[in-house]
Amino acid sequence: MRPLKIAAAVVCWLLIILAILFTVLDIQLSPESGAQQRFLRFYYEYGTEERFGIEPKQCAAALMAMIQYMRGHRDSIQITVSEYGSAVEMFNRQEIDHMVDVKNLYQSFRLSQPAAVAAFVMVLLLSLSERRKGRGSITLRSLAVAVIIFFIILGALGIWAYTDFTAFWTAFHHLFFTNDLWLMDPAVCRMIRICPESLFAGMAGSMAAWSAGLILAASLLLAAIEKALAKKHKAK
Image 1: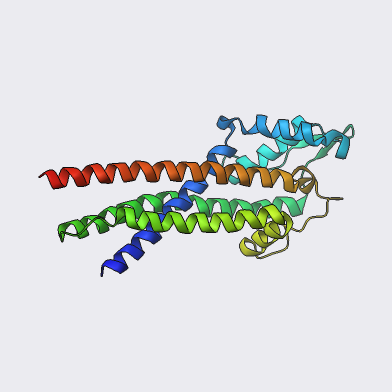
Image 2: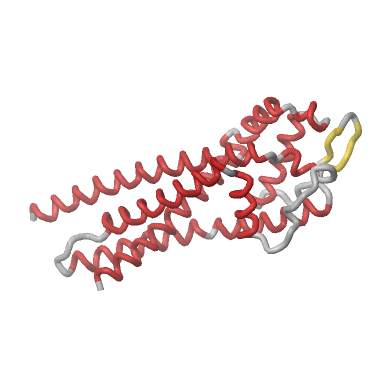
């Protein structure tokens, strides 16, 4: 039974790690974190006005409209921008329909947050059941296994993305989307122009780095708490 309990706890920890990844991403994309200012700096460096005639401020506003829509804070992604001096609607029908899929996916990942709370309670209950039998806690052992699995996956994906981000990003879309709306023509789709691979690569790298640091810090804190509790239990 103990190996099964450890395996169940590992699955729970992996769900918690997924929730941490999503939460880090959600915070990084929020206006409160200064996301629009970071995107504005990116677009100035990218040279959007020279590349396709839209000012960096409007590109950042358009991207934030997409982000706030998928986060559930806007009813539409559509905004009006100036392109080479002419007022135009930023997004076409294909782009609007694709963002419906993106929003559905994003909101599905949001469910990992309440699920993580339930998973943490499950880990505590599994560990408590082992302690009552006079056995050692499975909390740290299962967490260690989950963290190792996470870093193996993160490392493999990181190497793949670094060596061939186009293949990585294409595989991501094939995995999570069942249609070809994400296959956009830059000649008619402004969304693909304001969302170059370098933008996503930077966001993915930042999310991975922050998440890895947070997971390591939380693991060390939990290990310290577990050791303190174990010493207190032995003292009794």
